[in-house]
Image (cartoon, rainbow, N blue to C red; front, side):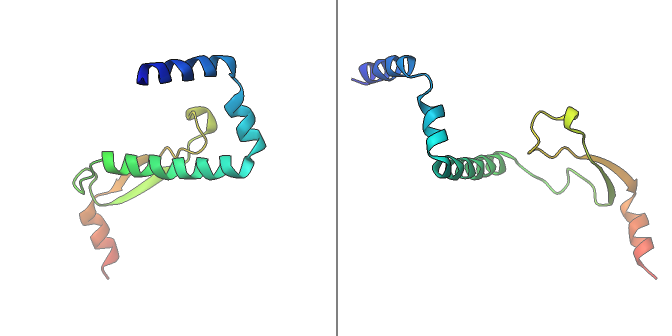
Length: 97
C-alpha cells in the first residue's frame, strides 16, 4: 500500500509542479509562519548536533570582521573571523589596577 501511495504522490506532483509555489503565494501568513517554525527546528537541530567544549577557543580578546555579501551564499548567515589580540594573562593584567 505504501508503494502505491508513493507512486500516487509522485504522479500527482508531476501533474501539478507549481502547486506548492502557488499555495504559498496565496497563503502568505501560513508560509511565513512555516518558515519561522522551520528556522526554529533547524536551529534546534544544529544546536543538538554541535558539541561545544569551552576548551575549543581560548579566553581572550578577539576581533570581529564583517563578511561581504560576495563571501557567503545566504545573507542570513554570519561569518566571523576570530583573531587573537592578546593572551588571557595579558587581559587580566589590563583589567587590574
